[in-house]
Amino acid sequence: MCPFCQIAAGTAAASVVLRDGEVCAFLYARPLFKGHVLVIPRAHVETLSNLDKVEPLFTAVQRVATAVERGLGAQGSFVAVNNKVSQSVPHLHVHVVPRTKGDGLRGFFWPRVKYESDQERDEYAQRIAAALR
Figure 1 (cartoon, one colour):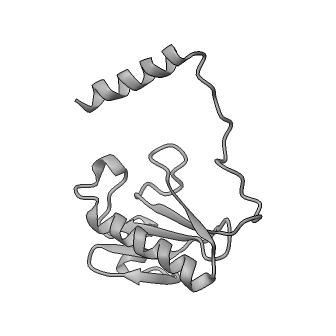
Figure 2 (spheres, one colour):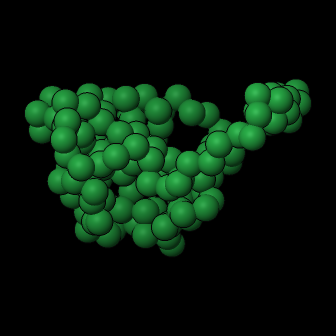
């Protein structure tokens, strides 16, 4: 059984902040900042593409993000999902990280790549739009 499934089932130790029939949220063992929470579906789902319905998970993410701000006095939060690449555990999880101005976290954690032209940018948009059809 995967470690996140064990936490969701209550058979592995974790600092749980929310557990109901469909989701589980717990403090991340390697936080960016204190109060960094992972929100997971209780059912084993590896990627966002494999998730049948987003409603219970992202409703919980919204609730946790609000609670992180209220409970910790954070000015905001950073919410992110790694999907396949950089996924430390192959179980879908959403990071909710408390933020305050001047906390040292700057933008995204990877280099940015610019489009060579507006035409190239539009071609990428067309490719993605075609895949949505």
